[in-house]
Length: 196
Image (cartoon, rainbow, N blue to C red; front, side, top):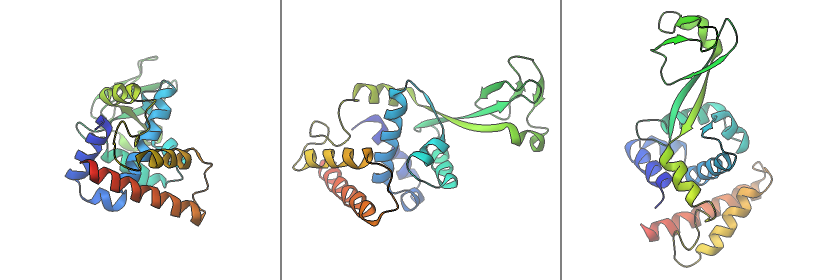
């Protein structure tokens, strides 16, 4: 099993509500695709908004998912992007409890004292864990459900179908696309159950 799959499985095991809100199989396929696309673009930081836009997901739900995947030993490390109120420079930090000092103008800002004035200049980014980057880079040419990864009857067909659906134009509002995606997820579940 790949690192991403193991980390997701562990997170879902620790939080049973995730499966109800974000079905594991769909999430695994979409997150994997999203990460591969970003790694191919040499990015190690990703944004929840981009994921929501790419896969026609609700922003609020996507942020909740990414926060859940950013827990200790998770898929991501949550980062805060803070824009300096003096010079407009962007600084990245891992905690809002630290004293913030702009890297350009050295303007001090204690984030613990004045949250209300700074919420307008804080955004989030998510750093992909290095182990996941290494694993996905080494497997970039192998689809997530290829015979070499999962084995078993029908896995070549599932791999081709998953790639076709993920590479198709965004027509997620069409019922036939929804049905095809659900069929793929059901096939993926069956193959994964046989290989655990």
